Length: 140
Image 1 (cartoon, rainbow, N blue to C red):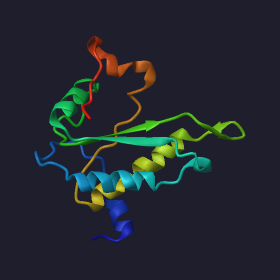
Image 2 (image 1 turned 90 degrees about the horizontal axis):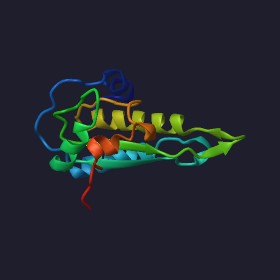
Image 3 (image 1 turned 30 degrees about the vertical axis):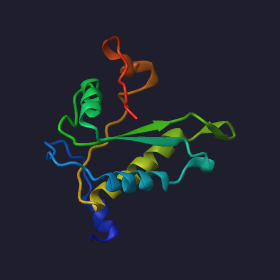
Image 4 (image 1 turned 30 degrees about the horizontal axis):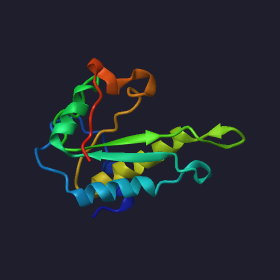
């Protein structure tokens, strides 16, 4: 495995065609654990994660992302955040999820995968889950 600094240097956003190979569930868990292990402002733990590798649900998700990105990705991790005010009425949610995503991006490279951080276009105000009048339904 690369040294840590080589790993950081080798990480980049991948915007090409992904191979049609599934991501191992245990690798998705390791990647999300790396996100959980990231620091958070005042230890408020404002981030949570949803891994999607079911092809049907992933296809639904990808239809609402505009502009389209990662259309051939075999998995995605959605990062959710809560606006929790921590210290002197400051909220560190942006810093928290940024640190979590960076940890996950490095874990992804360490495990031999490629990825692209897609952020800033999906918010509560966008109501993206209601696109075309329907909610994306996730099976349990």
